[in-house]
Length: 352
Image 1 (spheres, rainbow, N blue to C red):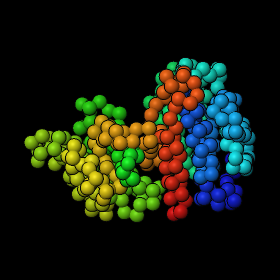
Image 2: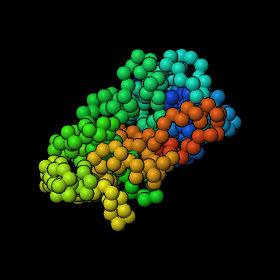
Image 3: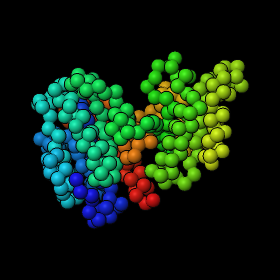
């Protein structure tokens, strides 16, 4: 695959080229991907990855004026992206094996769904795409197709040989409400042992570097929660703050990072604290994300930090029940925000 021509590189700084994987075809992914990409076509150059025939059918059902132009995977690999006009969306065809029925999962299409993600990663690593935006997948479909799969985040880390990534969600009425996680999908009983000096140090380094390099924040300020109620109450409610979190923060400060904490999680999410912060690092999934999702559900963005590529995603699932009802039921607000966030990050990174 050839490098991007200079004219396309210049365009990408003004109108970034984003790969949008349409996710589980039986869910709402195809609809929200098309609607958001079409709405933002003047801001970004969106390249949809999915079954071209089904995407064309979906686009026509949404709005007959939506124009798609499809290319084969082989053509993309041989010659790169064609220069389609702004009033057409590019589609890289990743054909499914069986007819798509909205709301009905089919494991025979699982490998085709995963292929779209592989192509997006391949294209991003070779600089054909400035970023990847992912619609939701159905993990069970891919596993039922015979491919072990735990989620986008873990798969992207494996495909890019990234030893550690960090999940961060952003959104809400506060413009800088970003919540990153020290641990992700762990049973609560396993969280304390997973929070170590080394793992927490790496997490802070990743957050600091990506806020600087992918968001353009020169000196990120990161607020950190404690693990225990009242941040441990000076050891009376747990010693993780004293033994692990505080030494980690002290070491991060010595490396020049602007970090503060540990704060009790039940009082940290207030305007007086957030207005001076670029990110909050929470210790576990249900400590930080309920606050953000209450403030932003349907408009939030999931961002994977630490990858050599930019990846954002929606903050919801496949919504098979909505897909079964037909077109027009799904809210594409989160996809709009995911695309805009990816474009913002791409511009910040390209300006370095």
